[in-house]
Amino acid sequence: MNNDLALTESTYYILLSLYSPQHGYGIMQRTQELSGGRVRLAAGTLYGALNAMCDKAWIVQLPVEDGERKKMYRLTERGLSVLRAELARLRELVKNGEMILEGQSNERETYCLEGVPGLGL
Amino acid sequence: MNERRTVWKVFPVWDFEKEEQWLNEMALEGWALVAVGFCRYTFERCRPGQYIIRVEMHGADDGYIRFMEQTGAVYIGRMIQWIYFRRSAELGPFDIFSDVDSKITHLQRIGWSLSMIGFANLLIGCVNTFSVSRAGILNLLCATLLMYALGRIHGKKESLQRERLLHD
Image (cartoon, rainbow over all chains, first blue to last red; front, side, top):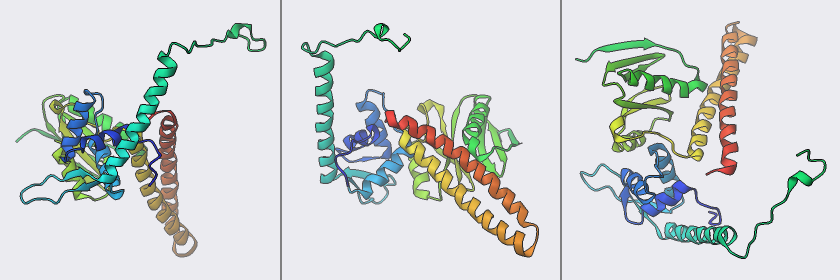
C-alpha cells in the first residue's frame, strides 16, 4: 500500500461518501450532492472501485441483514487515515496555487518571444 | 403484447461503441432492446427516447448485475461475455464508466479475452494444419482476425492512457 500516491477524484468522493455507512446507489447520490452535481459516478466504475478498496481494507462490507438486499459499506480506520492524508495533500495544492496565482508579491515574468532570433515568430 | 421486431446485424468487436450508439439510436426511434443473441437483436415498441442502452464486457458475476439493478438499470441479456443494460432516461444520464481508469480496465478486459481466444485458435490452427487436416487454416484465419481486433482495442487503450497522463 502506497499512501503517498494521490487519490483519483472518484476514489476521494467514494471514501468521503462512506464517512457514514452507505449502499452503492447511496454513494452515487451522495457524491453528486457533495460536488454540486459535477461528479457523477457510474455504477461500473463504482463497483470496481469498491472491490479494490475492500481489498486494501480502506472500507468493509457490513454483514447483510435478513430481508436487506443492498450491500452496505463502511469506512475503516485505515480508510480514514488515507482520506486525511489526501486532505493534507489537497491543502498543499491549494496553498501553492493561491500563493502563485493570487499572491501580490509574485509579479509574473513575461517573455517577449518576437525578439528571439531563430524562433521565426 | 407489444409490437416486436428482430434485426440481424454484425459489429466487429472493436466497434462495441458503435453497437451501443446504434442501439441508442433505435431507442430514440422508439425501439427498446429486449433480448440479444448471436448478431441478433430483438426490440419492442417503447416511447421514443424512453431508455438509454449500455454494453459492457464483463465475466459472469451475479453480484455485479444485482449491483447495477440497484442503481435503476435493467439487465437485458448476455451474449458470450457482453452484457446489455438499459435504464429509463428519466433517471438521468446513464453510463457504466465515469473515469479514464475504469475505461482502461474495461479495454484491458476485452484485450485479455481476445488474446485467450486468439491464442487458442493459433494453437489449434497450427496443430491441425501440420498434422491432421487442412481445416486448421480456418483457425489460423480466426487467430489473424482476433490479433487485428486486439490491435484495434490496444490502440483505443493507448489513446486513453495518453489522456491519463494529464487528466484524472
